Image (cartoon, rainbow, N blue to C red; front, side):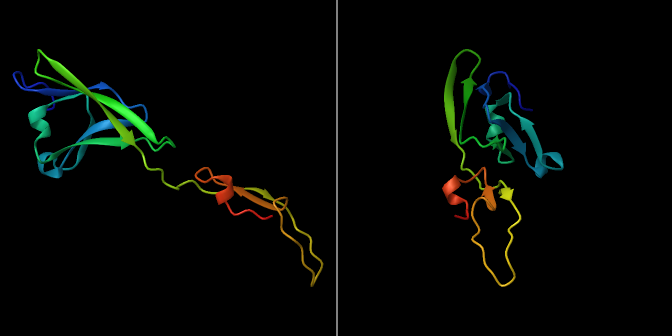
Length: 134
């Protein structure tokens, strides 16, 4: 399975994505469990099977764009198309406290907390979106 079937059409990855993988996912009905394999080439008839999915899987990096090129051939002629991927970023980075100093306050008194006392950064947020003490 997942190769050239002789006279039929074959799909192959001509240029791999830089920030992910093109995979074939086959369901439990076919394999006694889900199987993920990186696509190099597959007979087009295999991809038409309802138990098989062609999937782009992002690598989890902070990139928001990727692309890859697929080629379809009958053995004599080849046609290629580039697939463009837009990755929707997820706010999954933990904020990091970069400044946390001791604040001295007299009993019953008060003190203003500034960014000299408490400051945080977050790789997934612009600095103006991170709550900062002023």
